[in-house]
Image: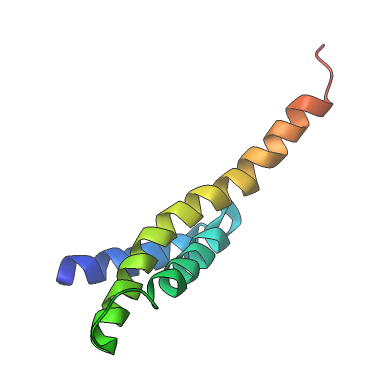
Amino acid sequence: MLLTIAAFAGMIALCIVGWSYGGMGGLIGGALGFLIRLPGRGLDWGERLGNGYVGALMGMPVGLLIGGVIALGGPALLNAVNNPPQ
């Protein structure tokens, strides 16, 4: 339990520290993962919140990766395509 809480807090800290490198994508991915998993199977709200927590843990790294590609990879790729070779 302590390890999952530390992983969650670490991912939030990583998203905040790496804000200019796609950290917003990590927070958006975590929120989307939480919302997608929330209405899933579950007998009570405790189980559903647990499913949402797992969704947030899965969504944050994926969102951070996609946000990093958009923030860093996209402009670098456009710069490489638009500049002629010398």
